[in-house]
Length: 279
Image (cartoon, rainbow, N blue to C red; front, side, top):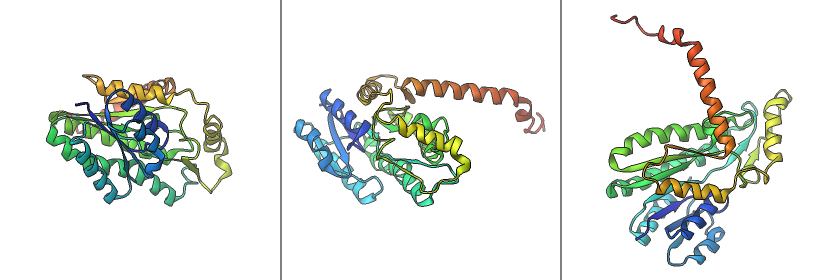
């Protein structure tokens, strides 16, 4: 039997395109969304290999019910894709706590709780692959999305630790780090802070306007991204971090250079913080 994929956040964007590509490739899939009507067209096109699963990742009862439903339908879960997420725009000082906490509940705690619910299944199987959709913003910080960056940096660090815990059990972990793709992330999926401080106009304000302005014209193709994710799962040696998009690669390489520059410049001070050897 083909592998079973459990994909969250399939109403739009990456999740929707990934679900379609996974099913077209002959795999089985649990297509999860807060409103299953949003994914009805996908599951109806593949009645024998797809099910629509109701799932709000911030609700513990729905997570438990969704995992149970997938197991009852397919008897296994081989690939978990934590894709559900939202954006939020505002300088850090402008950002509203309620909006920030909501974003953390979805982008990080929702991801972590779905993973925790699926892990017993994967451990019993001694196999599986977890794909956590983060962002190049989980490696590089940008003005206007500082708290969004924080959620994705959290996903990256969590995933790296998780990969080390699960490797001896035959379970793989990959962090997906896209740059700009033609999804709804910079459109209706991201709110703006209601607070605007003029002093941040040239930093956070300018970047927010830039990101909003090219929404719908980003270079990234969600279908090609979906194919890349499938390729990673099918690989014998998948990466811990899969960058998607030329801008993601450029941003990550620039970050490496900046880290190296600081580490090298401050090496003596860094090493000097230890007790002298022998003491």
